[in-house]
Image 1 (spheres, rainbow, N blue to C red):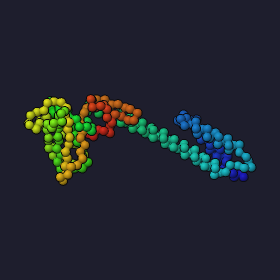
Image 2 (image 1 turned 60 degrees about the vertical axis):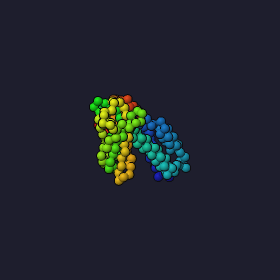
Image 3 (image 1 turned 120 degrees about the vertical axis):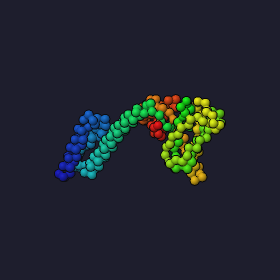
Image 4 (image 1 turned 90 degrees about the vertical axis):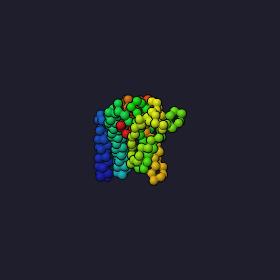
Length: 225
């Protein structure tokens, strides 16, 4: 009986120590639920029937459960802090992109006096890549053989030369990419060019304002030009 009482007393002391730790500033966030649990457990231990004391296994199990919950909550707090730090780092990285040109998913191509820039991404190497450019009415105005490319993200320039050899009018066009390997078509993701005008930090991460193209996620940036 003395061994049982000593063990239970030690468990009560451990519970009180854990409860005392909850009074520290860094632990007050989760003190309400666990504090009530430890208070009840401590009262149960101190007011138990001496002739029918609590079983050691039961006490150990209850302490193990609260320790597990405490560990999970600490892990959650740590993960929250890590995510916060990651978002801050992402915001700093995004801020460095303001004023820079980027390639993002899209099939628009804007032709200016100096020409235009676009891009594409390949999952596999391509023996031949051809760029097809159409006007607002859907008529093809240019077809340019870009050559062969390895897998990955690539950019291209179009000087505005049309199929007839004249120069196309400045403005917006639509572009599509035809990629072939071994005589078979392969998937190519078309990318459009835009300049980062500002950084938008939301609840789910950091986004970029790409001029009149709108707001895109950092993960949508395929290449910094």
